[in-house]
Length: 222
Length: 252
Image 1 (cartoon, rainbow over the protein chains, first blue to last red):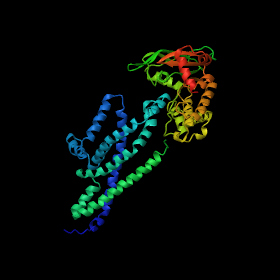
Image 2 (tube, rainbow over the protein chains, first blue to last red):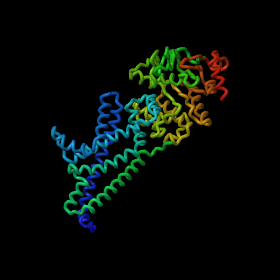
Image 3 (cartoon, each protein chain N blue to C red):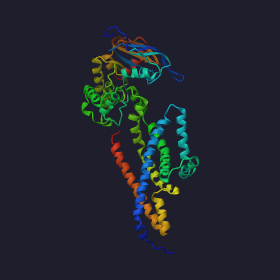
Image 4 (cartoon, each protein chain N blue to C red):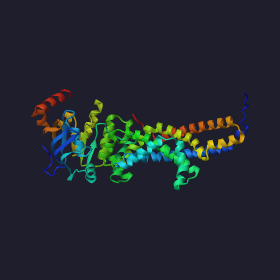
């Protein structure tokens, strides 16, 4: 059994792959940003005095964390049109990534919020600040700093999960790779190449996360 | 003896009772503090002294009795709580400075968000009080870059920036290394001399002697006795007070 490696077909279509990589990064960034927003709002709702709101958040988090992402994205793409909600693949992908990442972000950020010493809240109360102000100005930043490593590794996961969006034919790196493979039959070369590209994207993300951390969370702690 | 003329008390507690579940933390506590008075609260740990001052700014809720601050009676209403917290500053044992904010930002947060001052106004006030606690040169540092004593002085300045009518101190020197206790006490003495109304939970009996108008001794959630420091230290009436003073003075 002999197989001769030939990357020429892949190299020829490299521009397509690079363009698709940008789409992957775009999906990931959109998903992460929305997931962060969902995460923070979810934590606020989770701490609300309204039981119903708390229950809804818990239900959402459990539903997302205990079902496969593939089923979630199928649900949005194939089931929702039955009740009149029709979304294109890219929008579906972003929504699915945001909801999935958001559910995990809620749990992660909540851990950070719970770790804030009670005295911080009391100091805020004693100064006359209200609950919302205390969350925003006193709790949020130290909480995010505490969970930043977990949150960012979850976001790298989210970036890699964009490949599942192939299943609804969203435009991103894996779906483009599949097309090239179908055209050229160069399976090894194609998937080897996108494996490397994913590796580069993840590393870039980690680098950017590190930079953000150094800019935003640079205050010293004992 | 109170130095001020008779007037409405700034802070009044009437028949205050508090429970944690079945545990009776405060029992029928009555206390009045006039404007400019300095009260030192002492007593063994678990006697309810911290709980008591934490009730005054509603960090803890009472189940019985009445607390009035500057004519406002503390109820569950947010307005009453806000009104009281605006008049009463608090300094904590563990400083509770906000680690992600500089000393200046720690001092300007509440004046800007609660009083609606502009950044410039808030910073002018902050600089005044940081000057007063002698750490204005540390204004741009973060809490973790300061010594314990400096952090506690910053926390005092932060509370003063709201220009409160009274200050509550909850064991302000208990978390400090011994060599830093003095700088914090000196700051508090200065504050007392300037006429600030103060209630201090502390075991620093030297401080009590020097600045207190009255020393209040608590045990098991009750006020056992109180009096001017001279009488309190020289001639304690109750056995429990004598035991406590014997123990605490042996260490000082």
